[in-house]
Image 1 (tube, rainbow, N blue to C red):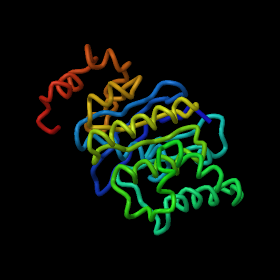
Image 2: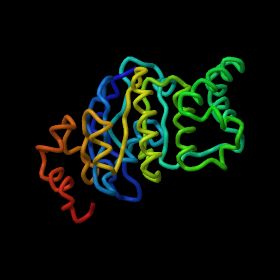
Image 3: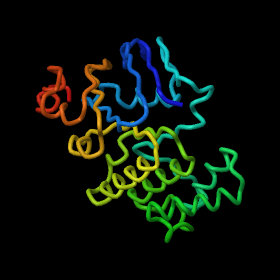
Amino acid sequence: MLPLVLDSLSFGINGKTIIDRVSVEIGAGPRTIILGPNGAGKSVLMRLCHGLLKPTSGSIAWRGAANGRNRQAMVFQRPVMLRRSALANVIYGLELAGVSPRESDLRARDVLDAVGLAGIADRPARVLSGGEQQKLALARAWALGPEVLFLDEPTANLDPGAMRDVETIIGQIRAGGTKIVMTTHNLGQAKRVGDEILFLSQGRLVERTPVDQFFVKPESAEADAFIRGELPWS
């Protein structure tokens, strides 16, 4: 399905430009981290890539695929839990994707075990802790076997222990061949989880840099100021 090609992609609402003529090709392999100050457009760009928003102008296309949405999934900062058990949350997504009931049950139990939730599979999803809910959201996405997984600040509201658990699960998913595209406000996490940085500033893609280089010698003044915490609007 990859690469994902953005060509002069723009998005605006109520006369305000949020994404400004972004052109980039996102291919398989490297873990891509989208960084930028608050209001830079990170989450909006992620939703455009996933197909939840339509661009105002420009285009976005999965090269070589008739329908990329069949092979992608997204996990949000605050995942929506259905009013059913943890196991049933995963099964529901699989059955919507056309997986048979028997296969859905087997696959759901496998991924819950992989993320450490097998022991609470029958517990109502909405009573789980924030960390457990995020693990469940990852399991629900992972069960679909996505080629690309979009993660929008998946650890923003978690304590350090839960954050480490989520990062471990992301590593497991990536090890299975899934492309990771992720936003985060945590620079330490970007270093741990990412291979390359896409840096946004005021809706523009300012630079694309390998993660090690980005934090040592960024290419743009905006990125340098961001890393130093010197942007007045960060």
